Amino acid sequence: MKRIVYFGKRTLDTFIINLTYERLLPGIKLDKVNPFAEAIQAYYPTKPLLGLLKSRFTEIHLAPLTFWDTNKKNRVELGQDYLLFTFSDYSKWEKELSKVLEVFNALGDILDLPKISKIVLTYVDIFPIPKESFMYNNFFTMPNFNFEHEWDINFYDANLGFVPFEEESEEGKRKVVIRFKSIPQNHNEINYNFRLETVGSVDNTSIIQDPEILKSHLDDCHDRIEDYFVNFLTDEYRNYLELEVDDY
Image 1 (cartoon, rainbow, N blue to C red):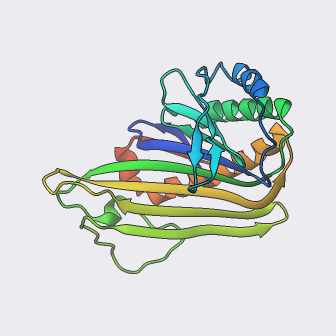
Image 2: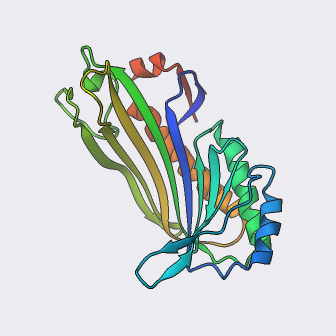
């Protein structure tokens, strides 16, 4: 597998970690919100506002609790059956992982959390590439596929998706999904803009409130995503992006 050791011209737009619970969280009383907010204030100092969601004409539910960092770029959202982390300002995996585990642990100390049934990690990258002489296969590859012909994609409506990895185990169903498409734009722009979603998931699992067990699943999922992301780029494009990798 390949690991990124340096990334000069970063392409990452958003990174998302979504933890889904087996059942709805127990009711969160107001006296539980402040202790949780205080426990995570080093990363997310803004206290959430309580809002309402109207799903039908007669049904009204509490909106998720959302905590933001100081710059309003990263947030953690606590819903009825999920815990969602969104990073628009992302430094490196180890640093962000420590935040996730500390928030997860703080929440577990305050609430009686159910087991986690699904983990989804999503990296969203944006690639602006000059239109002049653009050829898909000069920049991107199709991992684990053996195409005998050249991929000449030079239009505004490119949309590709595939599953390069999928397996079943006792710990759950693991999968990597790659979705690649062009972003709508004005024809007078000088670049083609492409969006790449590299998604890793672990489904049908049953993770107890244990940061170390969660860490092992997140690390494994992240490593697989990173490997497929690196292999999706040609050697020439990696050099252009100042992307350095090693094998392990």
